Length: 116
Image (cartoon, rainbow, N blue to C red):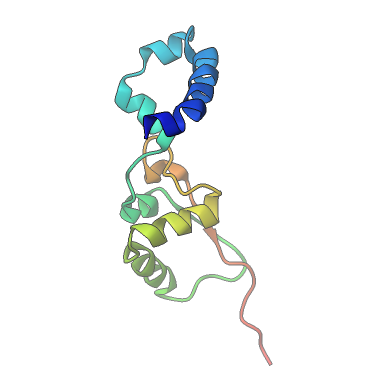
């Protein structure tokens, strides 16, 4: 396995070392902090996402209970669906450093129901 990826790893290592080797910030990071920056946080607890979210008021308000239902569905997702949702709303399936609460998700209703 090591031989199979050695060329790719060496290219990664060369670039990583070029950017980070002399950086005082890099040198001050613990291995866990560096992993969180490179790989994203492991926190996929959408209750944290909910705590950090903001409902933006608009001319058409959400129906009673709508947002509670929205969060009930999201919090019921398995890890795969949570990552897919994050990818949809942020472009990345990784939680930001500091956890989902720091994402600052903004929720806003765009328009109302059609009236005939």
